[in-house]
Image (cartoon, rainbow, N blue to C red; front, side, top):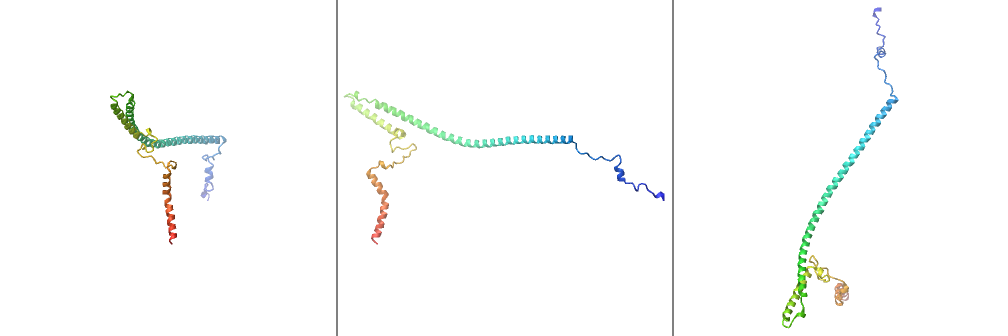
Amino acid sequence: MASDFDSTEFVDTEVTEGSGPTAQPAEHAPSQEELDDRSSDVQSKLAELERRRAQLEKERAEVEEARRRRSELAHGHQEMLHHLTRGVGILQEDAITARRDADQMAKSLSALKQALENVTAINQEKWTESNWMAELTVALTAVENARHEWNNARQKWPRLDPDKKSARLQDGSLPAPDLSLTDQSFGQLCRLGFALTWPVAGAVLAVLAVLLFR
């Protein structure tokens, strides 16, 4: 019977193994120094993230400013191309017109100067009995030529005759007629009043005729 006894049947193997020299010790709580080190590490990482965020914000602002300036350049480029092209065309046309007008004005000025010299040269006191008929013909011709040049200049340059109401404008059109009542005669005012009131008078007469012949 004694040979059937096993000494290992009542031995707790887990307790035996856990209490042996190979058992792992339990982890201890972090010390104050370790917590301080962890806090410093976290603060350093936060500071680095803040610095990186500030750098990214700066880069974003620079990109947005560059984008705005490029957009402004594109808009200004198209705008100035339009305005400058139009302005050059208009001024070129005006310059051609101005040169043409200047050439015509120079011709008119030369003709008026020559006519002035011819008219100024007329001196009747120097006429003699033998040549006054010829001198008279020459003088009349000079005056007539001067009148012709003057009329041509007045037609080309309205400034020479600004008080003439029938003078054409620079574009060739006639100015608007003067409708001031103060410049009209009594007969013209009567005709104007009749023209304005005859439709009303006709309607009144028609109504009276209908009433009388009913």
